[in-house]
Image (cartoon, rainbow, N blue to C red):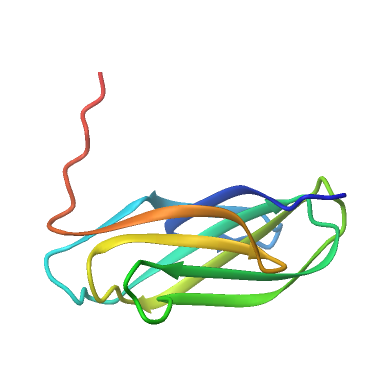
Length: 135
């Protein structure tokens, strides 16, 4: 039996899909800062890589946080795996996305209504912190 698995979940400023089917993932992050909420709308993307999928399956993605009445983001569709050890890449870009409040959000990836992976996205009040010096 083939078991769907998440190979990658990345949050980024932008995902570019080239004519050669290569993906360019620009500006990855795991946290978002804003001086106030609701924050100004901004563009961003999610890159998913899934494996262990053979044949057509139902796919969904939900971004949520405890206390919200409705998920902040819901994407649903169908994907079709041709080889069980193949990678299915799903690049998604969103424009004018807005977080109404700070908190710890969780992105959940579902295949056939089963959670196969999660990723935390931290949203905080404040200015983006300076880069950490290496060395």
